[in-house]
Length: 160
Image (cartoon, rainbow, N blue to C red; front, top):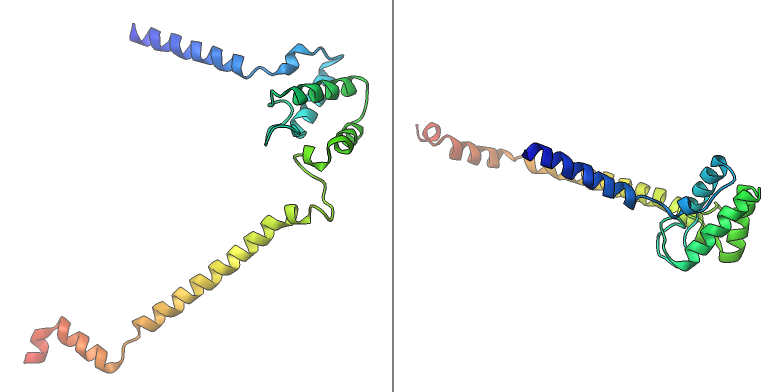
């Protein structure tokens, strides 16, 4: 009985999970399924100008809903992705792009992580090298230190 109850609970939670994943796109009727895929792909690539770090599909703000509808209508009217992205960037700037273009203003954005990685590897290399040098220096004992160590480790040998 408990097993059946657990299965029913899992099925119910899966049903609720599927309803939560529904997108607002389902309410808009596209001319074709291909247009729907293109529009969804574009809406995922464009950032909501009002929300922080949410794309047009994930955002519930009125601005995102209007932009989503505009993107869907432009896709259904036959505009290309480049035309739609140009329209959105001319209206809202490069902020609406999740993957901004590589130009002089975005070099630090695209190349900065690689620079930080190289800097981190260089600092790590110096740190490891310094640790190895200190480890070899500390293991080298002078003859007096070695004799003292032998005396401590083998007290019977020195007393005889």
